[in-house]
Length: 164
Image (tube, rainbow, N blue to C red):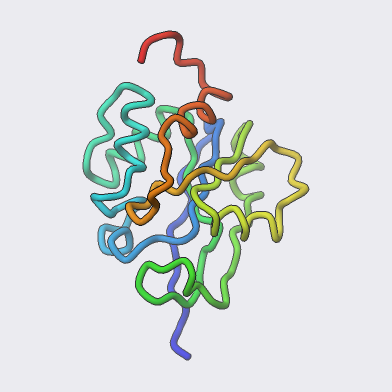
């Protein structure tokens, strides 16, 4: 079998209060070399609406945006065999060592973007001691996406006030 495909390094700093974990970068994300690179993915527009700011288009602009907001990004799978962008095809996965982020950042909550991220996270980290929750996937393939669920989960850490 061919070599595994590697995902991205985590994005975090000493101010990151929420860790958002996806499953593994899509083909589009791997092409642009940054998280949630598929233009149809709801992730960046959702975060922009939540924080009331533009997230930009480039990986560097988006990296700066999440760090400014106190958000860390990573994927639960750091390397695997995968066909296309299909989570269902992930095989021989290597899971992230979350201590890399958690030792350096005051993470208060972990949000898992979709069922695959949640299920793989629970295999290793179910007793982590930090609140975590499964979120509806922001993937364009998910018809059950609900932005309100994301906003409520983000509200558990970030105070937005009354403006929407």
